[in-house]
Length: 301
Image (tube, rainbow, N blue to C red):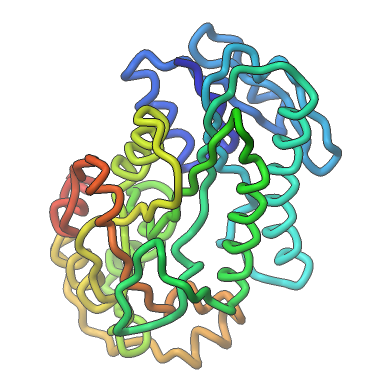
C-alpha cells in the first residue's frame, strides 16, 4: 500500500509516517519546503503550494489513499489576519487535492481528512457522538464545519471520504501537553477556571493508529479520535502533577485573566467537550491507552 500524506512532517503526520514504516507502507508526502523533500524508496517528498495552486502530480503515482492533515497551527495568537490563515490553509489544501484528482488518472480510492472535536458546542453535560446535530458557533467550530464540508467535496463514485475529529493530543514533545507540563515542573502548575471543563484527549500513538485503521479497513464516515475516558481539566492537571511527582499549590487561574493574555484563543483552555469514542471502537479499533494516567506514564517514562 502507498499513502500520500499532507502535513507529514508535523506532530501527527510524523507519528503516522513512523507507524506506516513499521507496517511496510510506502509514504508519499507533500511539503511546501523544497528542503524537506526526500527521495527514499519508502518515503518520497513532493513539492506543493496550495496558496499558489502548485502541486507535483507525481505525488499521486501508485497512491491508494490520502491522509490530509494540512493546515496552519491553531496555537499562534488569533489575530484577524491569522484566523484567515488558519481557515484558508485548510480549505486551499483540500481544493488543490480535489482539482488535481479531477484532472489526472489515478488509483486513489480513499481520502481521510483531519477535523477537530472543537466542532461540538461547549457543554459540561453533553456526551458527544458523531451524529450530534448541533455545531459550535465559535471560530474553531466554524473552521471545523467548513473543513469537513470541503473534504466532502472530494467524494465521488471512485473516492470515498472519511473525517477524523481530533481531541487533545497527548505527546511529550509537541502540542498542548508540554505547555501544560512546563509550569507544573516549576511548581507553578494549576487548573484553568473552575477546572470542571471536560478534556477529551488521545495519545499520539492511538491518534495515528486510528487514521491508519480507517485507511486499512476502508471505512467511510466521521470518527471521533479520542480515548474512551475523557477527564476534567482539574483531573488532568492532577494526573500530570502526580506523574511528574510535583505539588499543586496555586489556586486555579481565572478565566478573565487568560482572556486578557490570550484573547479569543483562551477558549482552547476553557471550552468543554466530552466526546465518545464508541463508534471507532465498534468498528474494531482497540485503544492502547484508554486512561490518562497510563498514557502520561508512557509519555514521561
